[in-house]
Length: 169
Image 1: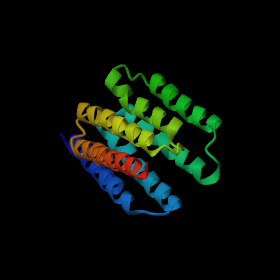
Image 2 (image 1 turned 90 degrees about the horizontal axis):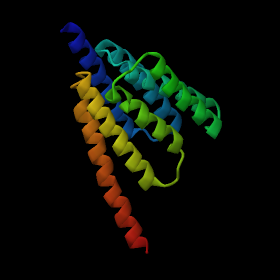
Image 3 (image 1 turned 45 degrees about the vertical axis):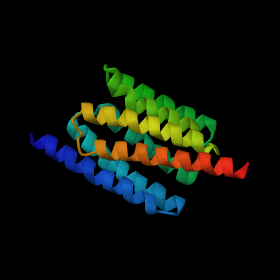
């Protein structure tokens, strides 16, 4: 029971950081804040037994450090996608739900530099919904509302993008 509370508390702190990151306007600061968030999520996910979530957050943390130093090329994307899939397979995540964060993270990694905001928002929505199912399955109840709220706010943003596109025509 204590590990459930500790894991949820850590993931709640990481979720607050995730929410506050929306206020950050500079890319370097955003990446650094996201890295701190990922570190807390790693410990929280491991505490709750969420190996694949910890792996995704670890690879995202590594990806952030690479993004600070190098250009995110297709080769880097392939390396990070292969790393997520390989580590998740190695550590034996046998349930399809345990693969949900990996699926979302791999798709996001591949399209992260797209100029098409509509596509990016759709990917974020699908990824957050995959995380919500995963978080619920590992009893990370503190994070599920944040996953859903992120999907909702990105959906609202899509309507704004579509409205702006229609107005521009």
